[in-house]
Length: 159
Figure 1 (cartoon, one colour):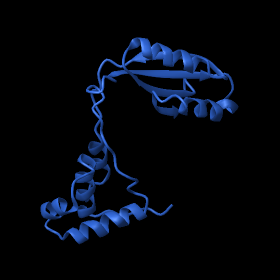
Figure 2 (figure 1 turned 60 degrees about the vertical axis):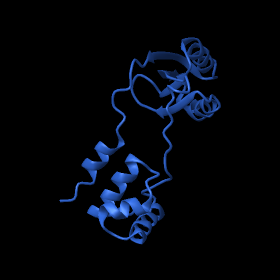
Figure 3 (figure 1 turned 30 degrees about the vertical axis):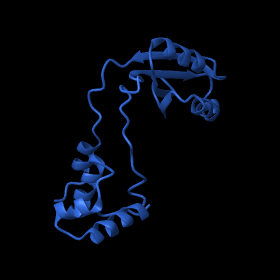
Figure 4 (figure 1 turned 60 degrees about the horizontal axis):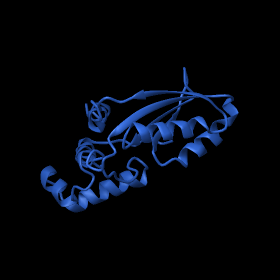
């Protein structure tokens, strides 16, 4: 895969879009003192290269009364079952993220629910998936770090 080279302007554009994907190109252009057309062309090029894949909408789950988060480590009976297990997890809408992992668990996922009762139902439904040997659940007390821009800023430093 070809590496995409970013310059300082690309980095600044990305930084603003990571902070707010809905920032108008005209606002970015004003801040960077370039034309809106320049921003459009650069963003289009980054999309065409696959560097930018869509945009993100951030929901306030607490306001929607879905602020209970748990992380579930899943141990499976046989690694050949991983695809079917992931497929089954995709059918559970409250499983918001799932990773295939190494170490203690074969799959690690995040669930988001209204309360512990609903979380228990989701965890029990995960336990019932064919091939799941056992699960271990950790309740999230508070999300402390969820910052996409810190890593990006470090990765794209222009020297």
